[in-house]
Image (cartoon, rainbow, N blue to C red):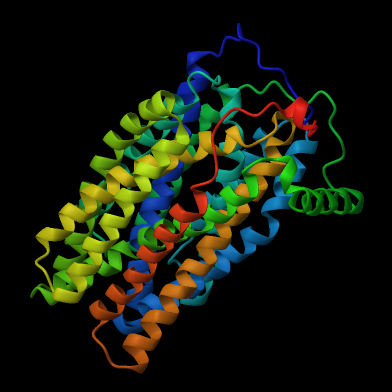
Amino acid sequence: MAEIAESPNRVIPRRAVASWVLYDMANTIFSMGVVSLYFSLYVRDEVGPQRADSTYGLITALSMGIIFIISPLLGAMTDRASRRMPFLIVSTLLCCLCTALLARGSYIMSATLFVVGNAAYQAGLQFYDSLLPEVTTEQNRGRISGIGVGVGYLGSYIAVGIGLMLGTKDKPLLFTIIASVFVLLSIPCFIWVRERGNPNPRPVFGVQMLRESTAQTIRTLREGHKYPGLLRFLFGRIFYTDAINTVIAYMSLYTVNVAIAAGGTKETGEKTAQLVMMSAISFAIVGGFVWGWLVDRIGPKRTLNIVLWLWIETFALAMWIGFFRLPVGWLYLVAAQAGVAMGGIWAADRPYMLRLTPPDRIGEFYGLYGMVGRFSAVTGPLLWSAITYVAVERSGLHELTGQAIALSSLLAMVAFSYWVLKPVTDTRRDWAALGSQ
């Protein structure tokens, strides 16, 4: 989109901010209820505990692979369009339709619906994040982003609460309710978030658009020196989002195995997984508010550094539990730390990216931002699947030992991302002087 100057006197209606934040809650219901909890348990029921990790990893990787390929194209399309909101509406409705139909037919059909629905959800996140400048100013961006994270995790309470009230046996009903609540909570954002719009829209569809947007993305990657820190940030982001997205996807399966190793049943393990998730959510809500305030105080880079150190310690403890068969109670400490750290990642991550992004290229750059996130969401589950396949299915190790080995790889990824990001600054760029406009 053409550059829209930031007016110091711009008034952003409170209902627009509240509606944007509410969408964060809505999409978190899908993320927690479908991706982190109930669909992985559905896969476990269908293929058995030994194949659950590798199978779910392949399904997730396929879904994320699709969105990885089309993310830059979607970003370019929104930069050319007069408004971004229609893209968010379509992706949300498609995700909810697929979710409502999960577990109502064959296993293959449900896997296919998950692949499409999760890809639509991930596309919606990209459109949603690119709307952040429409509901914030430079002065309150960290705080609003943090509030979105904190309130968003309330959606996880809703997702887990649905399962606690109804049980996890009737999964078709669970998925339908999750889809319905997602739609209802999204409507205010669709209505009240007002965009300043693109004063020079161009055709969104067609061969010419594909050719121009592909050429622009390649040119951006080749001319990375014009955007100080951008490519290094995106490269580093691959590794910490890889680790975090993977642990979110597998937390339920890991918790079930820890509970069973401690002498529980599959049913008590699933109940424990829900309670552990609730613990993580509680701390993520608090973390989102605190980290958002900290971003505005010390900047997104220093905040992210602190968060990455917390993730390193969290993965080390989680790995220790699996290797040494520690009691289930230790998982609640891991959940608390992971919850605080999750709130910090997303509170610092979005403002950090905006510091590195020219105002007239937000859609395109968030396409790249989304692309690396999706790439990590492909490689993470594939790596986890490969490690658990070799350790459990081929070498005969216990499922929990295989998962602990996989956790050690996630710890290494976060440590590597911290090293990669050390030279990147979050100082405000003078884009006119840099000649990127």
